[in-house]
Length: 123
Length: 396
Image (cartoon, rainbow over all chains, first blue to last red; front, side):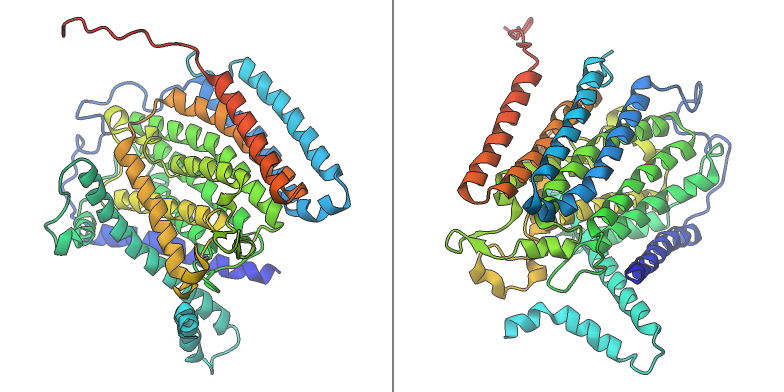
């Protein structure tokens, strides 16, 4: 069972090796130009960089991230459900109704978030 | 008989290559076998990457009524080679205040995950590089790591534009990841397995007197899920019209602003590989994988069908890029949360009903569910704001 996943480990190693070697080749072949302080500043269309480099961001970004985590967890629950659905539906329809109630509860929270304006980017 | 030979030519070639290692110790075989698989996948997709990068420029050029690259080699086909050499010998500039380690790891991370995701897609009959039970789950687990790479690029560069681009990229990729994950669920429900091979096998055969293939895209829930999946795929690979994170006119190149030389090329490679992976998964899930569209055409090898379907989807990607303008950030987000997410849940419901009542009744039921929710959502989401009649102040 777990042995099936060993080739994937190898695949991971090759993928990382490929990316690293591509970058290393470019370091070796690449032209080494003169480094100056002006050249090494952050690129801001040729102007001298101004202000903080990592500015403050709207809280919307964080709200989206939080909502994503919530929904993503629910979807993690749905995957095993989807895999066994075909076998279980033959025995009883309970599996369908339980997921429907689950999605309904999820939707209540979703509509609450919408009504609160959590996803309204204009404000 | 000869058709079957051609179909399995790569499998036979692999076995022949492995037979050269007959005397070797036992543990060498599986390693050599998977190394061959990886080499084949990498070789095929790097070639495809080179080809698509030049074809995209040519198709875009044709859409915009110009010629595109046509100087390097026949029809400009050697252009990617020239680009590659040029990017390899470019100077690699790392800004002084950048976080050197994170800045270096970010492109590796993005490229490696994109290559990994390509490993679980069935490219033809008996041609899945790594056929594991949780193939689909593995694909998404690996695919989501791209977001981390994007954020590392933005944070490590220590640049306003990079950070802004990374934040936007994460916000929209995360939002569209939900519909992407949910629209796969109907397929898994019908097939009852997470393995990509089983999903392709379930789409074998033809209905309606052997004319219409049994692909999931030809069912109501499948069609809806395919469209949602494709749109989410566009966002996940940061393509127009959802390329807000790297909108050139606003934030230079987003998270790639501080990357030069081959690191920049690595980002491009990752973007294209991500595009191949997501299109390949769409083909596997909804378009019947490597099955032929008409039973008479089954003589043509399976991998040809897979890559033909992949090519069609890639062309649509390029076509959309040539046609649609960039969307506004708030519109992108609103579309994801208010339309895509409820529609994706509807697909689950439609698939559940379809499963429960096979045949025409199930077909009509699931069509009805998808249709009603679609109409209801579009009615609810209509902004009701009629545009004011346009007046031309100085042009009349």
